[in-house]
Amino acid sequence: MNRDARRAPGAIGLRIDGARLLARLRELGRRGALEGGGVCRLALTDADREGRDLVTGWMRELGLEVRIDAIGNVVGTRAGTEAGAPVMMGSHIDTVRTGGLYDGNLGVLAGLEVVETLAAAGIRTRRPLAVAFFTNEEGARFAPDMMGSLVFQGDLPLEAALATRGIDGATVGGELERIGYAGAAPVGAAVNPVHAYVELHVEQGPVLELEGVAIGAVEGVQGISWTEFTVTGTSNHAGTTPTRLRHDAGFLAGSVIRFARELALELGGDQVATVGFLELGPNLVNVIPNHARFTVDLRNTDAETLREAEARLFTFVDELAAAEGVRVGRRTLARFEPVAFAPEMVARVERIAAALGHSVRRLPSGAGHDAQILARMCPAGMIFVPSAGGISHNIREHTEPGDLEAGANVLLHTVLELAGLPSQSF
Ligand code: GLV
Ligand code: MN
Ligand code: MN
Image (cartoon, rainbow, N blue to C red):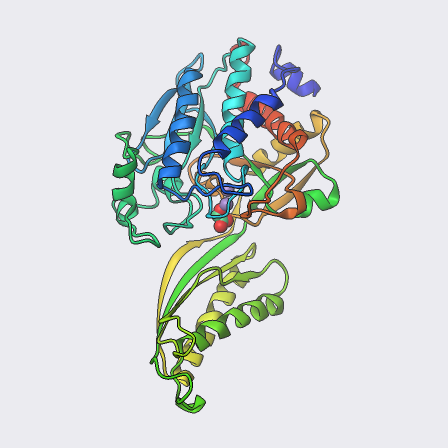
C-alpha cells in the first residue's frame, strides 16, 4: 500500500460501508422479486423500469448529474476538480428471467457506494467519476446482449438496436418509450469519452470459491457466439407415420442438444455449448413437430477454436436437415471475439487487491460483460468476487457480504488511483 499512500494521500484508509451496499442490493432486489428469492427484471419490462427509477433516484440523491441516452443507458456523473473524461464504474441492472441479486447490480450499486464513501469523507477526485448502468446487458429478451454498451460505444447503430424485436414480439424502441427511458443524450464514443472503465461483478463461476481466493483480477472475456435455428418440417400423425417417412423438426432440435454437448467435450479446454431456448410446434403429444426454434450458445477463450465449433455445428445441422428432409433457417443473434483487458488495468486490480490484504488471482471471464465493449473505447478492467457454489443466472446466486465489501473496496481504490486527487499530477 506504500505506493498508493504516496499517490492518494488522505484516502489510504478509506473503506466503503458494506452494510449500506448490502441494503441497496436488497432494496433493488425487491423490484421484480420472485417468490423464493431472486429477481426477474428482463430488459425494458415494468420491473426493469421500477429498478431504473430506484437507482436513478439514488443517483440524484447522491448529487450525481444524471444523463439518459437514446438507448436508455443511464450515467450519473460526479464532477472532478478538473473537467475531462470521467473514470466510469458500472454494469447493468437488467436480469435473466431467473436472476439473482448480484449479477450486474453489484457493479452499479458498488459504484454508488464508492461515490457516497468519497462524499462522506469530503474527497473530490481530480477527474470526474461516473456510475453507469447499460440497457439490456443480458440479451435474454432482446439480442444481442451488451446492447446498451454497444450503442454507447458506437459499434451497434442506434436505429438497429431500437428496431430489435424481442422474444415476446416487442421492440426495444417501443419498450423504451413505454417505460419512459428513451432519453435525449447522444450515443457514441466520440461524444461520450471515458478515461477508464472499472466493473465489479460476481464471478458467476466456481474458481474463486474453490481456490479460497477473495478477488479475481479479470484478464479478459471469452468469445461468444449465439445462433438461432428455425426448423420447418411436416406435422403428421404420431401413430400412423412410419419413422422413415417423417420430417421431424423436433428430431433435429433434440439431436443438436446432444451434439452440442459432444462438441464441447471433443474440443475440450474452455469450450462450452448450450441449447438454452427451445420451442416446438404444434407441441402436442400425438403430433410430429413441424416447427422447432432453438438457440445455441458457444463460448471459448480461443478465437480459432470458437470458429471451429461454429463450423462444425453448422455442418452437423445442415447434414442432418438434408437427411431428415426438413428446412433450416439460421440467424446470428450475437457474436463477440474473445477480449483481453488492458494489461495495466489487470495489474492495477491485482496490486490494489493485494495491498488491501486480499488473496487475488488472475482469471478469464466466462460470462459476457459491458466491460468488454467499453474496452473498445478506453482501458477497461474488471474485479470479480466469489459466487457461492459457482451459481448464477439462478435465484440461488449468492456472494458472502464480506466478499461484496472486499470487492467494493478494491473498486474504490482502483477508481481513486485512476481518477487521482487534487494534490496529485496524472
Ligand atoms: C450475459 O451476461 C451472458 O454472459 O450471457
Ligand atoms: Mn452481468
Ligand atoms: Mn448475466
